[in-house]
Amino acid sequence: MNPRNLKPIAVNSYQDKIAAFDHALKLAPNYIYALFNKGETLKKLGDHYKDLSQSTEALNSWQSALELVDRCLELAPNDEDAQNLRDEILEKIQNSD
Image 1 (tube, helix red, strand yellow):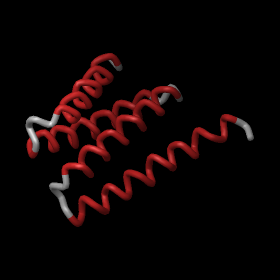
Image 2 (image 1 turned 90 degrees about the vertical axis):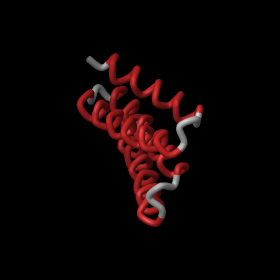
Image 3 (image 1 turned 60 degrees about the vertical axis):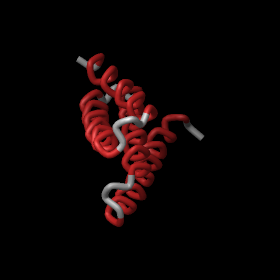
């Protein structure tokens, strides 16, 4: 298998995970684990886009991830994992300029 063919598969995998988290959040909009995991998945998708030199898509994914993690922190302000993820995302956004 050509490694280039794996890149669209990875994007589809991230999109499938995001859709699952969207479904969970429709049922429970304040479900912290779904907010966090969707944010983490969007961060990883942004990283993937960055690896593909698609900086606009990367930035959009990281900004969406940041919004979710901020919402998570509104509900659980002392969540260290969410705070660490937020710091990682902010660094990526700042370094994308």
